[in-house]
Image 1 (cartoon, rainbow, N blue to C red):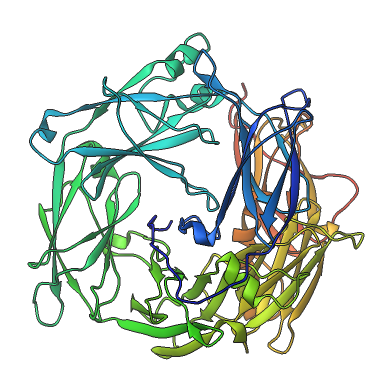
Image 2 (image 1 turned 45 degrees about the vertical axis):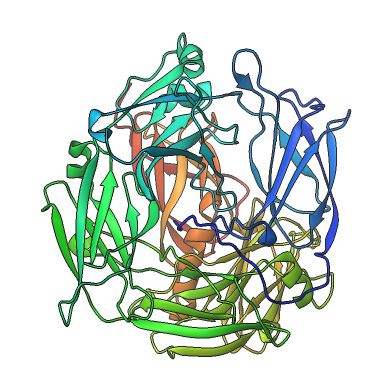
Length: 619
């Protein structure tokens, strides 16, 4: 999860070229497969959900014609998120398609109408403890999607009612902000199917609606009781001198875990304002990440607390280190380029795991950057988001579009504190070609890259880019590194290790990675309607340990969406196994079944491989 922040990004590099565009097209159909005429089509490109500045992305709004078709000029080498929507009807519902997150130019963008959604209306009712304190502001957001990251501030009408936006997805979140503090958050379902399954709000204790009243409840104004106002103080001091630490940035993970930035006072005090049930906080801790102030060498400090901790919590910050460098393009400094840090920051007091470093750090007017607070224990990867015009400048030919994310450095524990000048045009360009099993090019394929040999504490999330319609993509990365490249499609998978002297990768998808598995009980009866998934890959055979570690780390992240499936009426499901000759730890979750099994996978076979699980409930 990353800190959702908007940067006023104004580049100092004078680039006269227009961003390269080419023809994109698609078609929208209704539930019956017929053309959806007049549908409002949204196309959005962002290199990452944290980057909201329009200079680094693209947003288009179109209408379908009499055949349900649309055309657009899309950025070359960019993957778009796409969805279509209809007007709000008299009952408060609207037609909408499922979200497509890998649309590229010159490949058909096919959108089909999904479940009808409803405009959710909410009237917040504040607890009396909020009287006389800061007023709450309201914001809607979509979370959990690395390609969209939508957010919008809301204004209540004369009756105090908030109307949530019409966005794709089965639910969206309403946030309550006390000044700069995210004090409360709750998810609201938008479709009848999802509301009956999970309730009108996510995580609430209210009864789920029935088939008879679910539509009426989705149409009605939801009376939202905001819990009492609470305050928790954090006192920050220097571990060596005991002096208070002012102007330290604090990222707060409020229940259920959102990241926001705040600063300590001159006395080193942070006042956290939140609204959550005390019983909830007793069971699950709040988690904070303390970032060092400017010109200070303190390390990142993950910490957590529960409701029975003292009102004022003291934290001493140990020494850390700062990584400095400067970003240049065509010999000129590049200002306001967002830099992202992919890498773990470990756990805090009590073993509370915080996950990845959520910061986005822009270069200053001189192109310089300062990454503060990192420790040698947890390596990280430094990635720059490239604007379309920057990618145009860096592209050597139109057949190999430059990816919107460039790796500036793969860090190891021995990395020097100063990276010096990084010339974007001098980075190594890795040209990737992905083809189908028959050798034909395939577009919109996610390709992941990671450096080989960083060890188990290296970033677990590889760099993800997408191929264009020809199956091409160029990724900028440091020289002299051995890189692992991996691609997964519904037809199989492929991977290759690229040494420092090679710059071209040709990945042909291997269908042997397609595993068709049938799940039956001890009587041989199929387990229908449940889910089958790969939990872990226990062993990867013999060979280069660095390569095996990197492969395991990459595959579990990259192929996650392909490593789960639904079982059909015959208990058969199809998974994509990221690597051959591996021992798979499988999980089966269905009515009356919650089982694990192991399967050694070597290559695809004509008939489904059968695994036998035990039913825990005879009914």
